[in-house]
Amino acid sequence: MIEVVKEREIRALYDNDTITIYQAFRKEIALPAIKAQTFVSPFKIERMTWIKPSFLWMMYRSGWAEKEGQEHILAIKIKREGFEWALQNSCLSTYREDTYKTQENWKEKLNIAPVRIQWDPEKNLFLDKLNYKSIQIGLKEEAVKKYVNDWIMQIDDITDLSKEIHELILNNCIEKAKDKLPKEKIYPLPDDIKLIINAT
Image 1 (cartoon, rainbow, N blue to C red):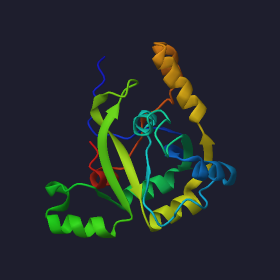
Image 2: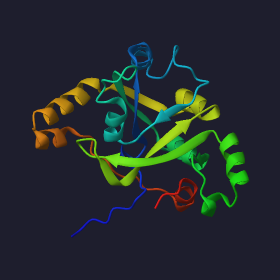
Image 3: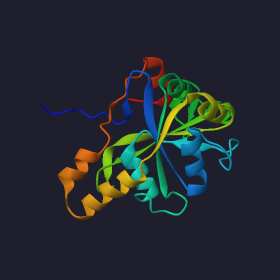
Image 4: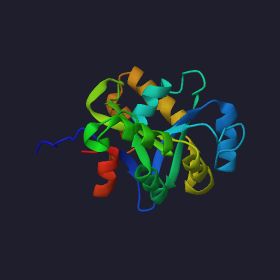
């Protein structure tokens, strides 16, 4: 049976209460966060921060934890209710007439919404583009405060795992690398949220 892949769906590691998202930071931010199990100084709560449910998109963004300032990969379990609040209170980063009717409506929404949504091509194990999209979620202002103070349930440093998977790929041990990937599956979304974030 051929699986029909929709262009814009959220794929993630999740359970009944939490969803795992990924971020990459320099050690000065990552190590205190792991110790505190939330983000503390020098993390700046007033700046926008982007969270990603796709492990491989995080590997693409961070260059397998080798890009400057992204040497530590964090797997962060957050409350599903917080995650869905973010989606409910979001605005797409690009204008869509069927969603916003006019450019003015979209710009106004973009200016006031505490969350920004972007869909980018998902990546495979070799970080090549796939023909469907992965979601990136930008949190600012009220959303960052909720994220740091209420949503985070657990922070794990998965830098070593990321490097191990990369090493297996470089050594052409593809099946072993696949076995170590997080088991992401389609995240169930209410219809109203699908409309807000332009999911398919």
